[in-house]
Length: 347
Image (tube, rainbow, N blue to C red; front, side, top):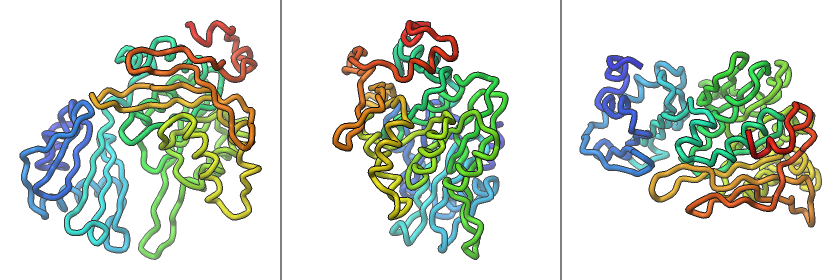
């Protein structure tokens, strides 16, 4: 975005938004404005008025077409430079508007780029690139600001260029470098409470668009069921989920589909998850502000006492990566695209 556009849209925040070292800007109150740089929080010396904050939000929302009012006190929107805006207003907040602007500075990095930045080892980058090429289903898990979207974007960018990809998100964040891609975004209800388009609807519609793969930006609720059904129909895909570990991600994915209705049984969901997910990539933000993969795990497809078997392939021990005892899933998928067994680990 040109400098003059930053100044016009973000006003007093323009210097932070144009600074490539600033990852996120948030406003707790007009007098308490923070930024994140290299994964660490900083309190700025910028002082605003309540009117300044409202003007910044209103200018930013003009581009997105999304609304914010007493009947709809939250908004999640994409900004012209690709940043993501989230706002909550009173009475959801006690007094001041709470504003978060998350920038995506590393969005266009490839798996090799992330390996160069030590977010993973070259061996893991090779494994993931070959897994994507082979069409295995990958779940990226981690906490807030751990780098899930950046990792997912790198994985999607590794998809062969001849495939047609459909991305499904609450707000447009993914921007993979692919020639044949369609991006879908949810829509909020209008003033009459009509016209809402949730993630579940988008997943169903995407299946009518001749996808080679579907990508769900983040699985939060009942849309997990629709994603699992799509993946079990033979359509490869990927997504992200909030979880503390690879095993917790699989457990959570067994739970979320139950929100779709009382007729959904755990006896159905367990085997479905075991068959649908092949790899889990756990990412983390450490105390020094470094983002990296801390575990790559394989889902074997086997279950015991309603627990899905998960095997560790690589594990970060706070100093280096250790090779686990697990084996990459679905060797037949690797063989189908002409990748020998050695290519799991080597280029």
